[in-house]
Image (cartoon, rainbow, N blue to C red):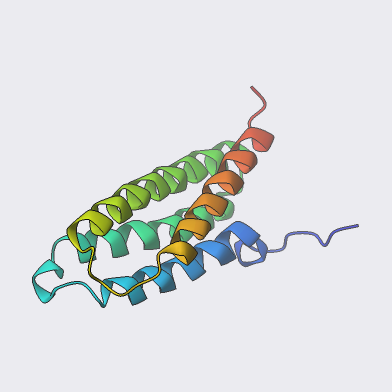
Length: 122
């Protein structure tokens, strides 16, 4: 039998989203300096929003609140995925392998959708 979730930190989706934040920071370090207040800032904020909303929702104490914050995290994941697509088009010559980020986004998206569906009684 699996261990009981004691904290948001025990959630695999939260752990993976923390890893995603780290990868986004690594990637955006390669972006041109003039993007610091543009795409770099947007991508970092979107990525940080994912684990932050998972943590906040888990801490609220009700399934309804948790679902709402999971939906916000899912929205941030979609926003980040869009920004990654833009970055790939704007900076095709950056020597960075996007496969880890793409994989994490896919995993996190699936996990969030599964959690929302399992928690949502409708």
